Image (cartoon, rainbow over all chains, first blue to last red; front, side, top):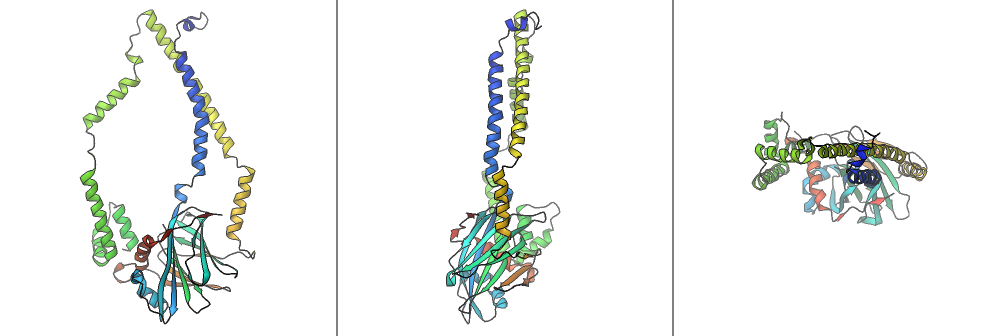
Amino acid sequence: MAANGEWWAGYRGWPIALVGGLLAVLASVLIPAAIAVVDDEPKEGATRQVTVFAIQAQRGGKTTEPRLDAIKARLEKLKPGYGFTLLDVSSGSIVAGESAVVSKLANGCKIKTTLTQSADDSGKFEIRCEMSRGKDKPTATRVKTPLNQLFLLEYPLADGSVLLVGIGAR
Amino acid sequence: MRCSEVIHELATPAADRDSSALAAHLAKCESCALWAKRDAQIELLWEATRPESPSAAAWDATWSRVSRSIEPAERVAVGSGRLAVAFRARRFARFGLIVLAQAAAVLLVVSLMWRSEPAPHQVHLAALDRATHLQPASGVQEKLIEIEEGRVVLIRVSSAAQQVVSIASGPAEGGVDDWFVFFNEVEPLASNSVVAMQE
């Protein structure tokens, strides 16, 4: 067929082949570019809804905070003779390597919670919590814990009160 | 049943669900009962507003239209010389497209392989990131505290030591998990969304 050139004479499909070829080349350039853009965005599995809250426990104080009703009994059992105040709550989606900061705390304290591992094979995530106050050296705690489960950190404050920080992720 | 199991069961009902245990928990736990009520309301709303599924006849009609549109060449009678030439030309166009698609696929694979090689600066950043997270300023390795499923712990932190105290190892009486309920209640109280900072 190619020897007598018959197919060239009647060939009218070249515009389709040309357009197809251009599209194929374009796809080979655009698809990797698109993948690169998607790769730069946080992966769905790596995003965690992290919630951090801070409660101040004052010896001899009174718990008047209605938002603490659900755990008032638990807190009183945990710290008998203390009154509790909910200082701040922060919640948001972060990816591994990002931090959640809670700063509306007593005595100029600041809590920086960094998601270091979004989830391992057992479904646990890893978090690093750093508590800093003024010029003191920050105290860091690394915790690996299951999702949908709170844990608490207790920091003694200079005025004799205690700062309770709760952290959980979904 | 624990609160988290009940919420999971309500969200994604399993075939072998223990309905009596579920009902018993809902009767005792106000928080989960409220969740179940909201879940039922959303289900009702969806049933009331969802569009009708297309009938089998509608699907068949759609597929036959699609089939007709993508296979016109098969309906061309290959009889006269002119039609035969057109048919051959179309076959050649298809052949050309296949060759070009294969070339594009090769280009694609090569470019993806090239991309998967980490750039030197990426390796450096990953190492730096790990070092920043796992090593405290003093250079001493931070101890990792691992918490078991279902156990709520309090970690007493002082400058000298960290003491782990278990404060709950399961749901309270009636299967109500107070800390889980509190977690659900405190989450929407967030005055501001988290200030996320990239290391």
